[in-house]
Length: 220
Length: 251
Image (cartoon, rainbow over all chains, first blue to last red; front, side, top):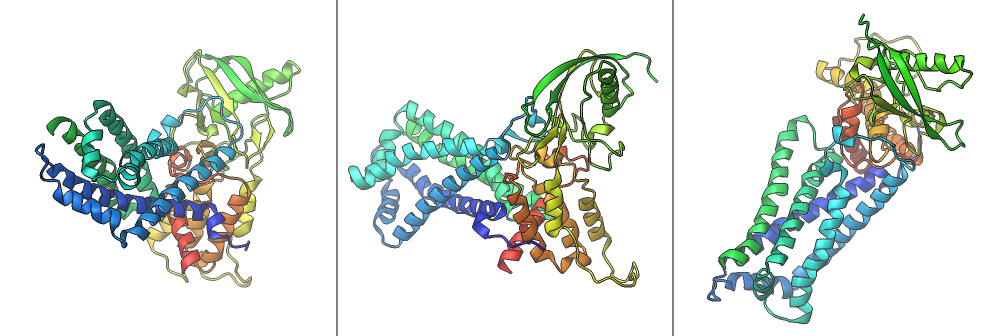
């Protein structure tokens, strides 16, 4: 038989790496959402945000979080760079396009455009990280809750978040079941379970994130 | 037999040879019987072209009953045309409407270079098979067919994978030009059966390596391949290939 492959230069190995980094980022989404939901305890009189602020301080200052933070950045970078790399490779596999193509009859648009929803989520992240992480950690040195109150007072900014969360939802709708398939786990007997986990991720997590800006815009 | 005939327009990709630049040529096609198969309709066109001293449209065909996998064409934006679970030769003209323009293109993928008109070179699939799509056995007296028991469920699953006719519709339909459904059907068929079990580790690596070397794209799980496969081979086989690959690398 022919030669063995090198994991990271083989198509399947790269796909598995993309899937694993995707799962890692999904685990971060859960942690991120759970902590952020504590911000909902903030009351207009300025009280209630103590626990959220404590979490924020812990995340920003405790040494145990530093390696996790760097792993998270590395995970984002790996997922994005590998995703774009595979997208380019895949375009090269069909140098001449079809004159007439009806892909909507054989596949979902979320699966065909996962690269695009991914890029849009990535673009959102640049703005998002600047508004909160960079401003509070490196520039203004104020508690996170202040930035949340200020940013989500603007209807335009909240709308931008809602749109970004829709794209995140679509990206996860394809990405999560795709990652299970790439790891070889999406088979008959687990399909329903994977679909259920999928709904939690692509529907409930973006909704959970959406509640926070809406709370600060309308109820606060 | 229906007596009414159809008037069609055919927009067909014409390309002299591998190195020439191709283009679409539109042909008026009157007198098409709705009972004709798609290939019979092309035969009729070619008969007309030859009578007029023009060159016939080259297209691959052999068995004309959906089992050889040679009739590769992209019809109106779909691999093997608009219907599910059939090849182009099993497609009948009654599927189309009178006066319609039908666009006919070859499979388009870097790994399937066009030889002429609608004929593409699919020997990349043969090279993938040569890399690992076999079992190594000592020759000698034929063993008894029932010496190795195989459960019905496993035998059925292996048979479903073995139904692959290597037509290349999976590659043609995939937005990435990925050959994963073809390769996984072959890997799966052999990995499921005791005769293929022995070489499963080297097989999956060798076939994936050859698939990559041929310039096929990377699977992004759109499942267009499963939807367009004339043998309706399930993407569960792709999941199995992925498992086989992880197993080969880790175990």
